[in-house]
Image 1 (spheres, rainbow, N blue to C red):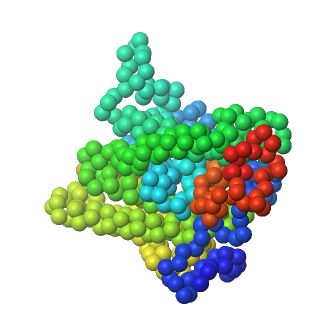
Image 2: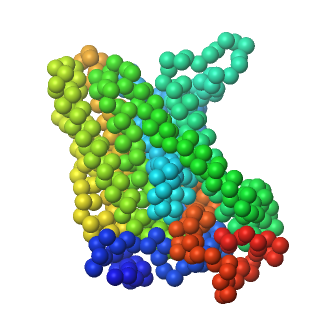
Image 3: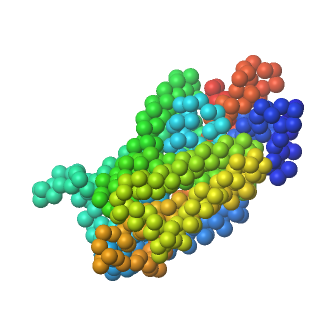
Length: 490
């Protein structure tokens, strides 16, 4: 039975295969060809911006303003404005740092690993997943810089020549994070930009204003769509994908070493690297779903970001969620099996101590909520998946809160125990970081192609036929005559 895409969307985004359960939903729905795909994506950037974008951008700008205010207050007053104390010396800045680093992992996995595995369903979502990675890393890099206290001396973290012989401490987690974030941001930015070059050329050819043509043309690097350009592009893209793949495992493993190399009870464990990586992919895919579902609704991209994309991401989120749940149980088992009373106390203090509410929020959001994704009808309802993704985002932030605060607030000496209470500056920076993230993401949606047009067309049936030999083939009338040769993507 052939699947009617328009009926699938109209029926609450639910798609069924009545006669053949193995039949898959197409990756591009509707009666689309190369030109209509280009029209759909370029219209958002060059011609029409939905009202929902302006509303969302206004809210994100307000949150970004809150971040600016709290940063100015922090720099002019001092780190005492945070809720940190002598016992809980790591508070919201480190919690937010680990949270945002984890968010960026789904972008690299979708872009690099799924590309190397030839998973064609990635083509509809990889572009804004890559953009999400860049913006999440920007948010993550902000917090270690301000957590050092004297932000004007943050340059000392970099191994740069200095006449004062002030060299970075190789045993400091700050230096590890510097190299991890720097490498991750550089490779992810190159990978993101490389994949956009053909689409930037399309925007260059379709832009009406001279300024837009110059800007898009500058970043398109003279792309003409010739066979030589495509050959070099595909080789470079494959090479960057191979370079980016190890980062999925290495970057968050380095972040986990910030905890695992210490002697604090609850942190000194070898399970942290794989546990953090699985949790990062888990939370990253939840954020991709949080962004993709409203975008396909507001920008009219339901034909390009289909229920099949949503369901596949929900399956990955379910699988990584099970790994995270297993890691939670292994932590408790290891503490019990070790016979170490400090470790046992820390893990029993999480569900029974003063921060029990944070522990149970974490368990419900990260373990209970994803279990609904076992139900096929839930996975095929995009708004139910969206709700589960929101719960996972909340749960992953609380996971970092539980790891940091419960271990530090109750250490070896009861005389040094102290409670952590966040201040309005802590909460303002948390909300403000979301403002920075969504402001950058919305600007990306407005001025850059949020869907990889060139890659989406490779999975369409038209890409597997010689359309140039068809008698009814007509080139894009918006493309100048001297540039039409080879411009099949327009």
